[in-house]
Image (tube, rainbow, N blue to C red):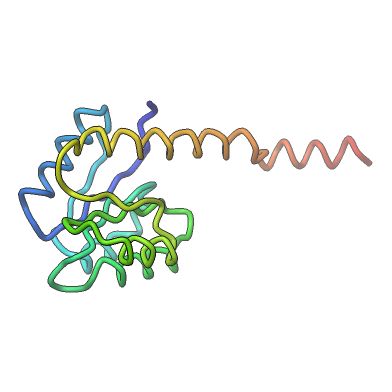
Length: 145
């Protein structure tokens, strides 16, 4: 699995925050920033994360509100909602606003994170292959003339 550039983890529960950071490091990810609330995460979007693991229930601002603001800032950021509650309605609502996935806290944290990272890595690789660079488009248009 490729290193996915910049990863944010946002959770107001310090134990969960550190657990997710450790799982990501165990999976070979190194550029990880952690935030204990959604407001600080939003303030740091200028760092251009590739993926944000975002707790749904937080004290300062809900994960859903943070998700909406992240998607307005950059719709290409992969946001994975995380919740301690297995609630289908919450998951559907998160997906409706652009969440890449919805994970339920509990057993197999590392396995769930690994699967999501693999899917995102595959998508990122496919996008790079299918989107020609500026120079490829420039020279293709010149040769067509």
